[in-house]
Amino acid sequence: MFNIILFGPPGSGKGTQSEKLIAQYGFKHISTGDLLRSEIAGKTELGLKAKSYMDQGQLVPDAVVIGMVDNVIANNPDVYGFLFDGFPRTKAQAEALDELLLTHEEKINLMLALDVPEEELIARMMNRAKTSGRTDDADPEIQKKRINVYKNETLAVASYYNQFGKVTTINGQGSIDEIFNALRAEIDGHSG
Ligand code: ADP
Image (tube, rainbow, N blue to C red; front, side, top):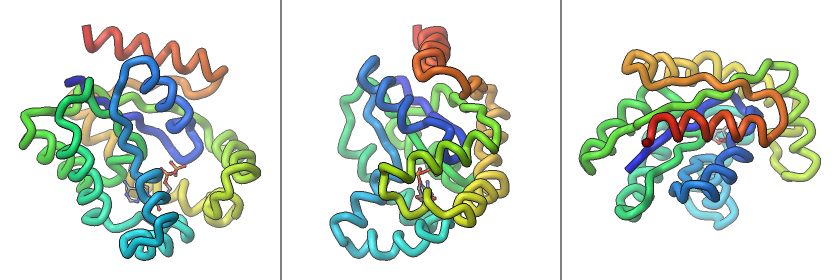
């Protein structure tokens, strides 16, 4: 398998680029944000628990998120590879992911980090709020909170994979296709 993490702050375009990468390569998409939102839509116990954290722009507890990811990995043994989107979001999640993958004799091959300036992130979230119905996108206080959580907790994930030389930074500004082509070039260069 070829397993990648698409990394970046909220609003950096991970969801948009994930869809294109999945269509191109056949990755199995693991978006913890999407998984959580579908638990909320289904009014499950897990969803009810997660909603209060998400609406406040806080992280859902590691154990909840890791359990969900564990399920998807275990149920998809025959895919081209996994594309992790919005996960791992803490160093503890990164360590747990590496352990999970190891039990399947797998590993993270590459982390692609989208680089987008903060003003642009806010503008994109505001814009997305108009159509997504996401309560966490519409409120400037919550946007700020999510960006702060990213800086304080999630950036450490990039340092974690950087120590293994697995991180490549991609300019996340430009057209959707320009960014997609830059991501593709990296994947093609590493997956040979
Ligand atoms: P974005 O990347 O735009 O912040 P996501 O859809 O990835 O949006 O996540 C939305 C919310 O879901 C986060 O603010 C957080 O509350 C929760 N969430 C998603 N993934 C994780 C994760 N790996 N760990 C903890 N919480 C998560």
